Length: 266
Image (tube, rainbow, N blue to C red; front, side, top):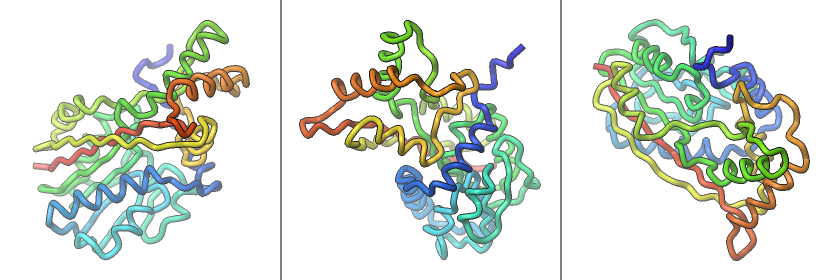
C-alpha cells in the first residue's frame, strides 16, 4: 500500500537536477535566494568557520559567499553528482533526507531551494539540528505557497476542460505560517520567518515551463502522470494563462514567494 507521507519521487528529483546540470540553465531564482541569504548572514554579524551548503546545486552560494562570513571550510552537498561537478572545493553527494554528517559538525547550515521537495521535512530539520554545533545557525529559503499559483490554476482549468479531471502538475509548497512550528518541533530555537513575493514576467507560459525544466524544477510528485502531458492540455493551459494573467504588453506574470527561515541550535 502506498505510503501517504511520500509526496515526492526523490529519484525523479535527482534526475531533474542531473538534466539541469547538463543544460546549465540560468537559475535566476537560486541567485535571488543566494543574494538574500547573504544579506541575512551579514545582518547576523558573526563568523562561521565551518559551514554546510545543503542542496548546493552548482555551488552558487559558495561562489557568491567566497571570502565572507568568516567561512574557512565550506562543505557543499547535493543529491546530484552532475550539479556538484559545477561546484568547487569540498563536495559530498548526499540526500537531504539522509544526512551523513556527524553531530556538532557545523557552525552554519544553509540550504536554498532544496527542502521544498523533501518528503519528511521535520525529519530533515532534526538531522540538520544534530549536525549543527551548539549555538550554530540554520538559514533556509524555500518557495512558499503562493509560488506558481497562476500555472497551477491554469493547468487545473485546462485539465477539467479537456479530460474532466485534475492531475497534480505543480508541486505543493509549504505554508510560511507552518514553518515556525516545524522548526520548533525539530528543536531549533528562536525561529524567524520572513516572506517576499517576486513577480516575474515571461513572453509566454511555455517559456516559463521551459525555464522550470532547465533549472531542475519539473514535476516530481510521486502520484503525477508519468507520461508526457497531452498537447491539447498544454495548449489549453497556455490559453487560460494568457487570457487571465497577461499584462498590457502581452507578457504573462509568474509569482514566486520566497520564505526565509532563520533559527539557532541551543
